[in-house]
Image 1 (spheres, rainbow, N blue to C red):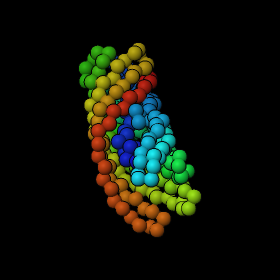
Image 2 (image 1 turned 45 degrees about the horizontal axis):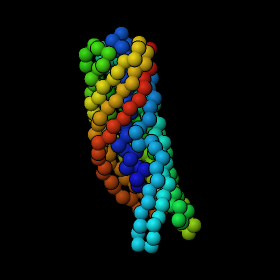
Image 3 (image 1 turned 90 degrees about the vertical axis):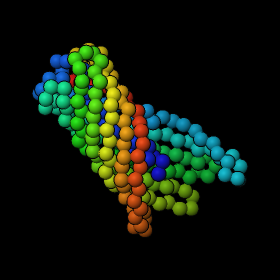
Image 4 (image 1 turned 45 degrees about the vertical axis):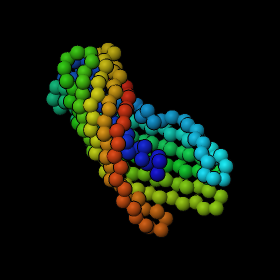
Length: 201
């Protein structure tokens, strides 16, 4: 559940690298990682003594885009999220794999090396979560739609590379199915921060 909730706050960024590169007919390729992609440890006490868990998450983002007009990009982005948590006291594990694919629109403002931008996208979500323990193993699958939008800044290092940051809001609606074919609907929304690197040609 935690991996999926973090994942849906994630969305793909697109940007370009100079005034010339924002002209109609140009392409861009992008890759990046969400700020949630970290290793962490957690400690808690549920009444039976201190417990510890190890958590790891890797979030990868890729995208392709095309300038249909000056400063206006239409593209496709995908995100892969892999989340694992392990309870050190029991050995129980939770593994989550999440995929997002969908179109994105972005518009750049101005002609300087630092360009403000606005964007919106919609994506199809798919998640597979496995619960592994000594006494019981189970899986749940979910699918749904993610809507997101945001504002940010692209800083152009040169004619080919830029660093980009964006603050956005995401909202998703998903249906989860367990081993017994029981279905649960869930809606989650929240704010997020993303960074990435883009190459244009």
